[in-house]
Length: 112
Image (cartoon, rainbow, N blue to C red):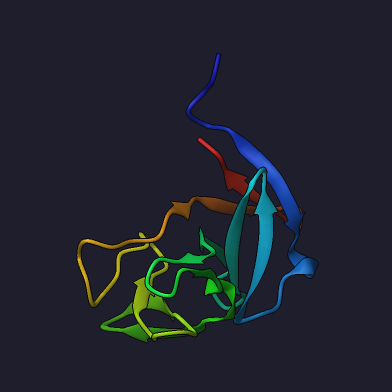
């Protein structure tokens, strides 16, 4: 039986780089993690860039537009919102996103 609230202990907060991205392996899938210490929050989006067809999103640059945080792909510079993975340049494209939380300096990711 699968519950809708499955949290997986992914890594330590010390494994991440402040205000930047790192790649982690969640089961069989690469996930781009972005740690923003001022918000005490970690965002998790898919590592695969659907425009560049490469696993590079953790190397993207974090920015904001109209108060929404995004990551810009390092390949063709499309912008993806960190909250929901939507692409600002093309509504038909998005990245998968995972909910995260920090508990006792551990990054927990929801796999449901």
